[in-house]
Length: 210
Image (cartoon, rainbow, N blue to C red):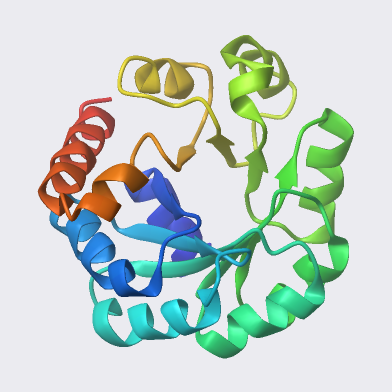
């Protein structure tokens, strides 16, 4: 098992930052780390994502694993890896991206929905899959596919909040991906990083008590 997968299964939360401005990125990352978050990704459709990933690796390398999200093709994977991303996450299944990551010893966690896509991703070399859009599919869906596909690590992404996070894990999630419910962009814009730390702490404590 590679290091990133170990971290994922241990800490169970990936913080997703989409659309954050460069001037706020470091303070947001520090706030998440202070709240106990150990894995965070910047989506590649965020302006300046590669530069922010590079900055985070330099500043927070020993404290948190830094990944790239929304890696929809190999061109974006190349940019992300050049910036120092330690793992790649996609909303889609692109087998070329999985192959690209594996050749470089990187974890790739592609976005999948159907049982066919899940198994295809696994066979292509993904060491975990992102079940997406979980908010629409619902916890019952996760529970049903978990039965026959019990060996494949699954990251449930979408719809997770403090009230239902335990239900996601009961239904079979190994980890969750969290965007706006964890990183409230309004708080970021207002400089209320203390609130982000507190929210991160609430989620990490909820996961620790499972």
